[in-house]
Amino acid sequence: MYNIELRMELVSYAKKMYESHLVQATQGNVSIRDRKSGLICITPSGADYQTLTAEDIVVVDEEGNVVEGKWRPSIETPLHTLILRRRRDIHCVMHTHSPYATAFGVVYEKIPIVLSDSALCLGGEVPIAPYRMSGTTEFAEGIAEVLGDGFAVIWGNHGVMVVGVGLAQAFAAAHALEDNAKVYTIAKQIGNPVLLAAEEVKKLHAFWMQNYRQRELE
Image 1 (tube, rainbow, N blue to C red):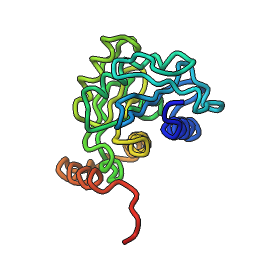
Image 2 (cartoon, rainbow, N blue to C red; image 1 turned 90 degrees about the vertical axis):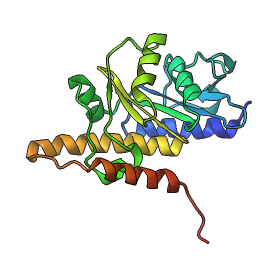
Image 3 (cartoon, rainbow, N blue to C red; image 1 turned 180 degrees about the vertical axis):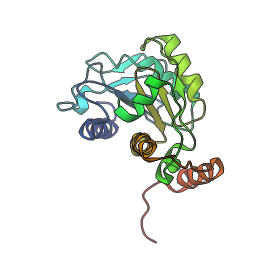
Image 4 (tube, rainbow, N blue to C red; image 1 turned 120 degrees about the vertical axis):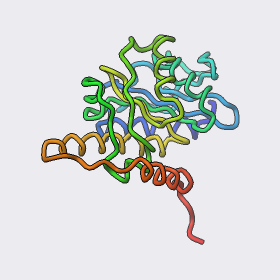
């Protein structure tokens, strides 16, 4: 079996998505690129996160052609492969349906940054991509265009997508986005939220990109 370790890591984070309520039932999908081979491991279409195993993970090339796997890959495979072809700085794409962040895609309001922890992960306000039927080439092109060189985008009337250097970073970004959306929503009910200055957000994000990894004590 191709790269069992990477498949197992992908399964672990897919289950974390489900257990932390970033997705429900069979919602969402996640992929990770093998930096050595360039092949992409992705969750299968209609995956049951509770029973998902490494053997269920599908391996595709950068054009989305199945290299190994017994199931059909996620319907969003064209989007994952397009993003990974265009963004050599990241290797993971994660699509969730976190409710507070998704709600911003229903009212088509960008998510401003109000939390320093979210600034670290996201690097700026999160844009909204207009609704298109998912799973199509047009949809993938639209999402990629709105994402640009950012780390998160809200899909209009649908859900959320974050990207990261690896699975841990993308998972952190997904939670940072949902936390920021939730706190901002609550804060607006209390008063007028004070946004973090754009330059401070950029500074915090640059620090995170340089330092976010586990290190042994010297």
